[in-house]
Length: 452
Image (tube, rainbow, N blue to C red; front, top):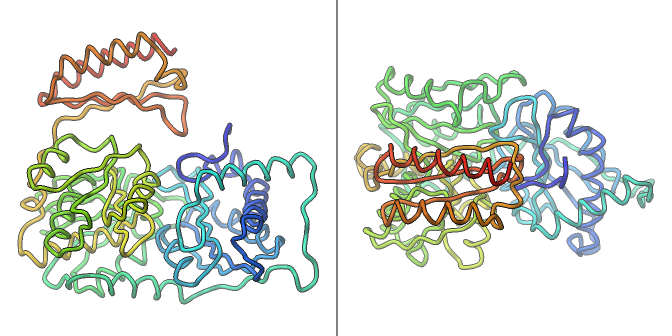
């Protein structure tokens, strides 16, 4: 798997790349590293462990729990809950770490292990690197220090997690959703029970699809990566709004009453203006990534809202928000972080806040999202290339410079090595879709020839 930790934890095909042995070893290593870093500060540590409904999550959860308990960590098993719920519970329960087993929007055979530090925040890169080093040292023969007797961790099920998280979501809403009809696509994932419960308690009339997880159907033709079913259901049921989550529900994409997609950039735009109106958009600034549509930046500039851009990945958005005290940030893919109420992207919270804005204004989602115009954006994945040479290839640099000259101020180019695969993503925006496609095609050919 190369470096174990990617942009969002450790992922791979369950029982092939991500084995029970690896999950157990990483958990023990995490306990040792956090203890050495002073996180436990002499007290008996506690961990919150949750998962999405994937079948492989059952044995991986058992491995993680065994690893933590064997290292002297008490474990609270919260069962199937969204990633942001595990992060929230880690913080509110005062746990020393949290562990989420999920591969997010990936297909069912994949799974992943994601760690949260005290407070429910993702681990810093430096801590992940240390965990990986410690894991490798012990995998190759150096024995663990193992507690015995009363020193081993205790394990119990924490059934109150569901209600505590839903109550939190309802408690932070600025207003109720009475009068709204909402279709929820749960991707047969971790939000299959939480999200319908939260929207119902908030006053919305709901229709659910993709809410029957069986361990094998997560993200299968539904959810935030497959919006066709949601679009059709919104139109069929005459709903005001459609909400789509991914497998672990840290994302939210939306569909308006006409069945049109509303992406993360547009959701950020709507929430930015709502929070500015409420006086909660600190610094009058929103944080986005370099992948956000140029139309988002143009719209925010027109509305007097500053945009700070980071590298791709919600962890980098969050780092910028925490460093500068900003309240809102996110990605085009639907990871939206409302830092006053969550430590990570929270798809259910985002959907509720979007619904609350519709209910408060009486405006349609299409009207609200119309604050920005998405410029045509073409994304081409170029596989089987040496992604490490993207920034050093003179041939590629020359091609990008020429493309940027052609596009001028109404377009842009972005080349991004994948964080998890041997490929380079070529993204081109332009006022004209044909021009965007042509420029992206030419650049993809150069990437293949220069880096192949």
